[in-house]
Image (cartoon, rainbow, N blue to C red; front, side, top):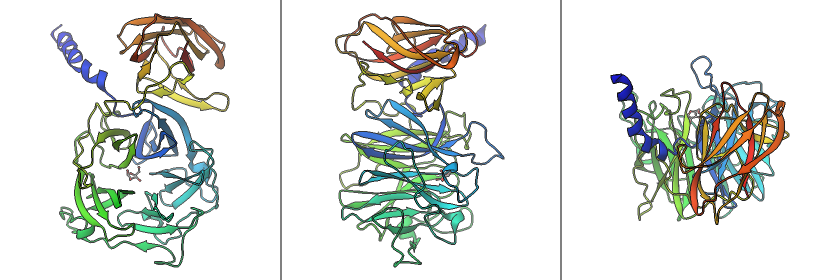
Length: 457
Ligand code: FUB
């Protein structure tokens, strides 16, 4: 009895924290190595993907995923946009490590490391793919392919694109305008090795007996207000995040210090991505909260921050709350993909050629939350596209939290198959203004139904 009362108190005390939880930003999969890209009023977030089952107690990573957001609190899942199967010139089945995508002249170039096979490039006409391999071989032609990981790319104001990468050294190439080849006239057949001096990349404390620089891996290269930044994972395992700046894209780099310190709920690796979006600055990283502390099952999180007046980056504290304020409202009167989620409990997404990405593995008590939903003058009806091979269940539409005011309940019956999609609708109570909305799923044991999209009318 005493234990039950204590548990109840812990839950009551945790409630406000859970209600605020925004990190990690994806709860349906384990995601790592965030690479955010701003394009056409939207943030596209490319991630690597730690599988739910880790093989041989090492990174188990087969594909790269993409998520997008217009408001920095609701993230739409675009599924696995590329995988190791894209490359026919090698036969690795594991090793889809940290990606980076950039747009040039309406094409999207996804640079990816294949651990042990070096760095490759894929190209697409859309940020969410499909991506194809334009050169049929690895992009970086080096004799140290095991160290060729974590590509980061930026295009300077004069149009010159640079691709940096590497562990435990930093190399770069000057990409040609086609973005899939590079200038072979500089460095060693095009590859320039950066000098790893303590002035450039900090002095390692030598705790493993090997003095050197703090630079380890995971570089993130960008230009802001005429200053070039190199953010990176530092000082081996466990890693913290540090940075250096330079007056030019190719150095000399000057070490500037730590950005994110080590912390218990962070993984033994960390990997940063930084963007400015709609007037705010955001720092992406990964932690191991969602998996309960498993370093091979990481999750991407994000914090809003402000640069100091001199362009330096403050120390950023990893939080559970993450981004507190959305930068846009969500319009529920247009079809909302069900995989647009601010927070979810117990759900997965899957994809097929008919529906694209949809929400699945729905069981009694699971829910998804969308934030900053502009209900305007109020809606009368909730509509959704669902499929169920079981007995179905119910969708409760609740205001602000999973326990919030019940606006309506929609019945979902069996449709005769998990891919037999049909429309359901029902009346909801009229509420005006901007609110968070929760879809709370109810039913008996087992999987209830899949949901592809919903909207209000
Ligand atoms: O995700 C695999 C590797 O772990 C990445 O390439 C590194 O940056 C580290 O995050």
